[in-house]
Length: 365
Image (cartoon, rainbow, N blue to C red; front, top):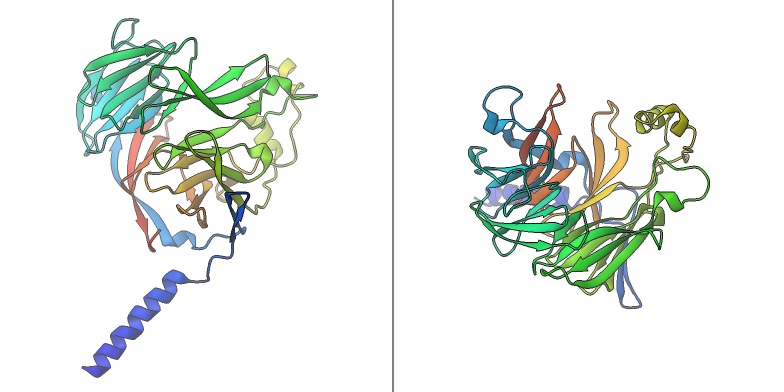
């Protein structure tokens, strides 16, 4: 019995050591009341400490119309696990249960109550409603798809997020200032505060940069804002609901060189006359987008690709802002909730589908 206990203790110690690995090599300090987390170039854990396991796939090239999409712009997921797919081109939402079984279609083209013109964003709110950002208005539905009400947005076209209090976030083009501006409005669409700006491409000096960055954000911890502007370097900011900076997350990074193939792909759809107006930098920006999950973890998409070019690497930070993983994803996560990863993907024929994956962590994230 003693030998068995000793053997078991050795095994448990071995597992514990393998999880801890080398300690995190970053630093945390308080600077003028702001928590500053500085991360090294390499993450705490290795890629094989994390994996995605496909659970649900929704979408067919041919077959039942209920499972076919035209142009998916946004996904939303209820606490129950129901999946809502906003089809921008079809001007409706398709609702599926947690197993991917079709339930109903919500909305249609039009200007009336419960109808859509140019729907671009959707979310499930803390008030158990579906919020849809359309041109010049926001529409609200019950989780069962019944139209509830709408709010005019005073000319703002693109609604981009909603916090736990029902406040609305948009990135507005302010031409007189020459910037994109991230602003927050209350549920009746009264202006509350601003969180930051980034320049419009037209205000850049000289030729246009096809890789120029704009501000990126997501709601984190219910009512805070995760904000990043890549031209400021690899720096992520977390602001409280009043717009006050409370945490800054920094990371050392290795620049990714822009190839001629990258340039040709980026400007492929422009006319020959317009192509000569572009001038590309030597390196990509340090990141392209940021996403937060319901546990306060942060997922940052980078321009670093896998050797086969099929996937981009994402940097993952824990709720403390520590850089813990660098893993390749085939597509950008749309929703990360209850340890599930939801994304919009394309098959080999270019048709869109919705995927849900289980997130497997070989450590306690």
